[in-house]
Structure formats: C-alpha cells, structure tokens
Amino acid sequence: MFTYKVASWLMEDNTVEYLTIQEVAVDWNLSIRRLQAICASGRIEGAKKFGSCWAIPADAKKPKDLRIKSRKYIKEK
View 1: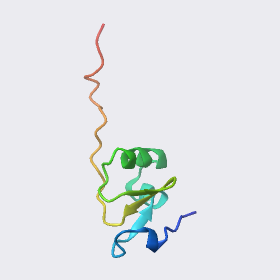
View 2: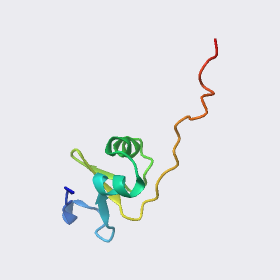
View 3: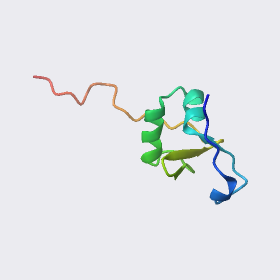
C-alpha cells in the first residue's frame, strides 16, 4: 500500500497522530473518493488538507451516513 507521510512541522499540534485517506478508507470500509467528499464537507473533526492530500486524526470517529436510502424523496407518478 502506498501511503503519504505528512511532515510533522506542517501540523499545528504535534501531539496528534494523523492518517492518510488511504489508511482510513481501508479501516472504515469506504472508497477513497467517498472519504474525500466527507472530509470536504467538514464532517470529520480535525481533518486537514495539505495541497491535494487529506490528513485525518488517528482517533477520529467514522461519521454517520447521511445519504438518503429510504427512497422517500422519489416522486411517484
């Protein structure tokens, strides 16, 4: 697995461990693109973007899935 290493001097708080999108996607069973969208919407507290790479705190919790699955939004004809 290819992982990015984020330089510790870029972080505001050096006491927090950060993981890459790839590492968290495997742990949470999500696609990389879905995890990028969740980070961009601000739903993961402490996630930071450096250029095109996201750094996610190691102790971050997986957010609840807010996508509509009930099909109630579909209009019946």
